[in-house]
Structures are given as structure tokens and as C-alpha cells.
Length: 291
Ligand SMILES: [Zn+2]
Image 1: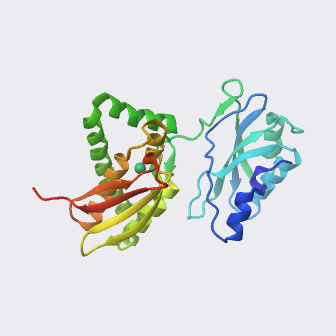
Image 2 (image 1 turned 90 degrees about the vertical axis):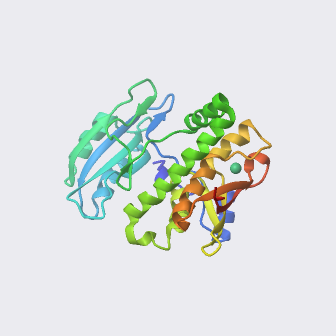
Image 3 (image 1 turned 30 degrees about the horizontal axis):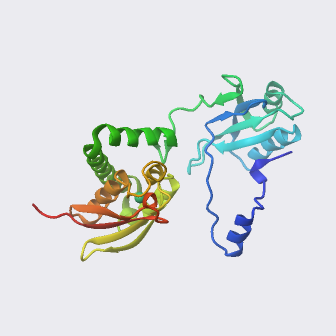
């Protein structure tokens, strides 16, 4: 069985990263839809009793049928123990001993399995999971914007309204930054006190915005320097307007977040940018001038 879940990455990059004992950072594919010409794709929803060994009983049956698992996720990972756990499994049965219907009926016969439903491709070679909606993270709804959508959002406002569009993006970012801080305070409650900047770094990476590094944050002077590695926004600028600093939304986001952190109106200026040829973006955050 070609099981991607247990595949070992033997690339030189991986060897190097492991040799340095640094955590390996690489892209993660979040599978919500698949397009694979010539492959028999399917999606299984399997409800199993929440007890040790349940998941391995399901994967054993899939493995014995030589079905390739493309993604397997537990869809309701509650800290509280629930009676049933749901698995969402994207499979490829092209080289399998069973087709999707036969696999479904085999899974139904497992003692710990309570329910199995299957989805077949809605279009030739194309399958999307329509059984879970909306998408949520940490209990809140989110929508996935793929890069072409983000690029269109940002480029359109910049092209249509020029410098006013640039300002609009910055103001949007500011509002986002303030709301983000407030939502963290509600969501993570007491750990936000003293840790809000670390949460900003961690969530920035987990959500795929950028790998942020707070270089310094001085509570007395109310100044900060933040680096952003591989931000999605400046990834647009790198492709379209190379040579100039590009961040507006992200610059605003930092200004808004630090306005809450320092409890003073702050501004953020981008001093280095990947769109201008630097290897990362860097932002200097200072108090806004009083009128
Ligand atoms: Zn930048």
C-alpha cells in the first residue's frame, strides 16, 4: 500500500533540517477538493466509537484493500471525550482490490464503526467535500481564500483606486489587527496577558499568513520591529511590482495589533520587503503622531 500518511521524506532538505535538529518547515496541503485525471477518487465519512484502536481498525481495512489514503482527518477533535469520532478520508481506489461501494460495506462491518457515508466525484476526475460546511477553526468560521483570489482582491483595489486603494488596504489591515487582538483576548482569555505577541507569531504561521518574528517590542518607548518571512501579501508584489515595498494590509494589521498591545495609536512602516528584493519584510512600529 502506498500510504502517504507514513511516507518518509528523504529529500536532502529534510536530511539537512534533521541534522541541524531544527523543526522541519514545509508547505501543508489542506485537502478540501481533488482533481486527478485517470484516478478513481472518493471521500468517506466514517463514524467510529471513541475508544483506543478504533482508527487503526478502519485503516487496517483500507490498507488491506490497497486503497491509497490521500488525507485522513478527525473532524471533531474535541478535548472533551465524545462517544463518537468522525473521520473524513479522501481516498484513491484506482489500484485497489475493492471499489468505493465494496470498501464502504467492509467498513460498515467493523464492530466499532457506527456509520459510513461516501461521496463520489461530482465532475469527471474532480471531487469536493460538500459534507462539512462551514469550515471552522478554534470554533470560529473561516473561509479559505486561495492565492488567485487573494491576489485579485489586493490587485483590484490597488489598480482601480490607486493610492486611495493603498490607503484603504492599510485601514482594512488596521481594523483587522485590532479585531484580531480582541478575538484572541476572548478566545484565549488569560493567556493573552503578556503573551499576545507570541500568539500573533504562532497564529500567523498556523494560519499561513506569514512566519512572523517579533525582533523587539519595547513597552516603555512603545516601539517594535517585526519581520515577516514569506507573507502572502508581498508574495503578490514580488510577482507584479518587483522593486517596491508592497505590504499594506499586513502593515495595517501590525499597526492595529500593536495599537491594542501598547494601548496607544500606532503606525507601521515597512523598511524591507521581498517585493523589493530583500529576503524578508521588516516593519518598524512607532507611536502615531498626535494631531
Ligand atoms: Zn513586504
